[in-house]
Image 1 (spheres, rainbow, N blue to C red):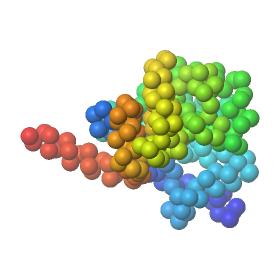
Image 2: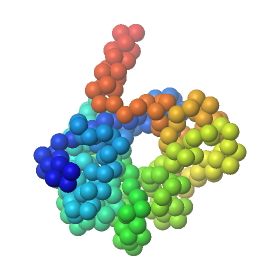
Image 3: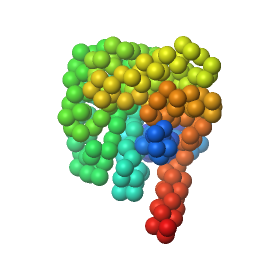
Image 4: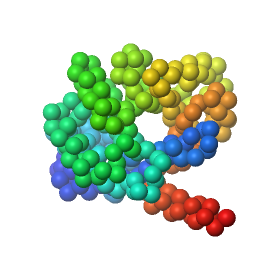
Length: 255
């Protein structure tokens, strides 16, 4: 299995699905999140792929390959009003090679400039990187480079209110736990309302994991601005959304 994972990384035997993030005020697609996939590997095993890379000290290589692939396959010239959310490990951001990697990537794909949001993936195995004093400086450097930051899985794992205050992210992605049974939980509604109203430095809430119509209706009633989940759209090849987008545009032009 270890040899197999190494082969995936060396030969870049992966592709990308994209899941929409919806603007609940306009019911339009606000952004897409890129998700790495391997043809003969179940999506549930993708985490194992990254865990194996960490064990073999190739996490940086896999993470940057995933970032580069997501940018290369996303049609920025078509989706000019949508942002691309890409997962990023804090340890990758702290790596001294990352600044030059990002510079080269933006030089190669200038159309991506200003349209990328990095989601900080703060898994338990990233604890050391998450508490590193220089991480806040690296996030500030990203902002100055025209790349926005989102904190992923807030309310689960290591993502904390302290990090929201210190990192000043553009987006807060609230963990799917808070979307599940939101309609029937006053406690979850209060937390969602609290973070919806948090607008320091224009920070915006994205509620993840919307899978039920009642929960979606409750999120709308709480004025949640953006949401993501299987009810709104499952991860698909970008061709699915590209065809759909071109069809709607052609109808609009005809009318």
